[in-house]
Length: 364
Image (tube, rainbow, N blue to C red):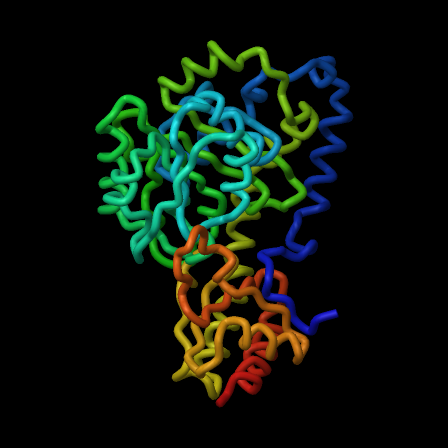
């Protein structure tokens, strides 16, 4: 067992509102409504879709109709659905560095995809143009693993790229946009898209709990029409009971309160960790990156040790770490001696102790 494990973004069970969720589930069962025993519509129950549309308007500045929203059991299912709508013959583009599961899903559907390099503002639009891709899959609100938040100017460049051809689309993967700690959120790509080129994916696994396997997809008009032609016969992948419980959770204001509580909890943890590192004996040898959003940040350590040496020395002292290099795909040179630090699972006190321990291990 490790003293501290920073290799994942796993959250703690006490952050989940068990009592409220259990109460809403009981209420759902006790209604004895005959409707609960029927199969939900393929896109999801209308109450939940309406609640998501309201949430997206309030938090992300998106004006969408509930009919554009489709509920699915996790983002992986929705990626597959989008491939069917966009076409198996299309060329897809993904961020490099990036989340390896996305490439694995495109592989499993046997579609062509390209890795597109990034700079400090996100994916490079000229490289995207060169790749001749039709569809680009990006996380502009908070990129994994770099933590980059794509600025508004690059967002408009991407929308310009998509608008230049009828076949081009953007998949906006907004997996943890609620967890932004500083400043006002930048509008989603979908919210500033006037050409109907953005398919937006969100999930409740970050904002409520990983075990809540409910995600949603917002389709632009052309893809909505295609969905109605190709996929409207599909059975729903999330039960009516779960959908109804989540609907009541959102309708009762519990979801918004839960997001605010989580944001405060994780901001305190991030602050404790960052300030302990900045006050440590290695403060002049480290660079902290991507700490304004999400449940991890990057730490570049300039003490002469390689990424592998940093990880091995921490492991020998009971701290589990992960480097950034596994996320660089297809011959791209990773950022040197850089570690991912997922802080969600530890208390502020544990994080301060771990920062001091890391400083003592890495002080050269």
